[in-house]
Amino acid sequence: MNNKDFLNDMAARIGATPKEVQQMVGHFSAVLADTLEEGDILPVQGFGSFEVKKKMERVVVNPSTKQRQLVPPKLAIAFRPSPTLKDKINEQP
Image 1 (cartoon, rainbow, N blue to C red):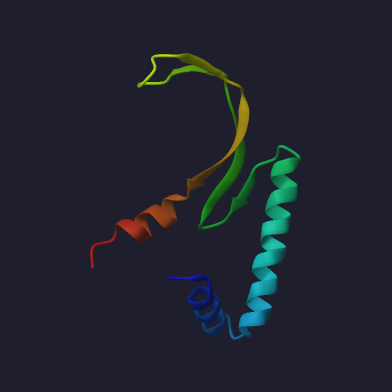
Image 2 (cartoon, rainbow, N blue to C red):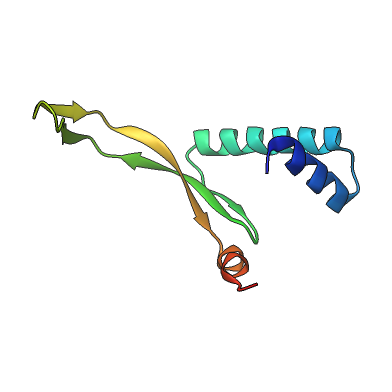
């Protein structure tokens, strides 16, 4: 499914135009970014939760040169699906 198909499907399900759905998705991503920037968790009922996790610094080895490199710490976005979403995906057709 590409973005256009997603917007059209969502528009048909909620009775809105694809342009309105695109604006809603844009607002959701803005709220998500702001919330994660503050270090908070954003739970979405029936879908899952988004949070920022800190990855510690680590040493990696280049397999071809055997050279060791230090990878600095960084922040990463983590998504944890809700049990409802897991059950829906794991249903057998």
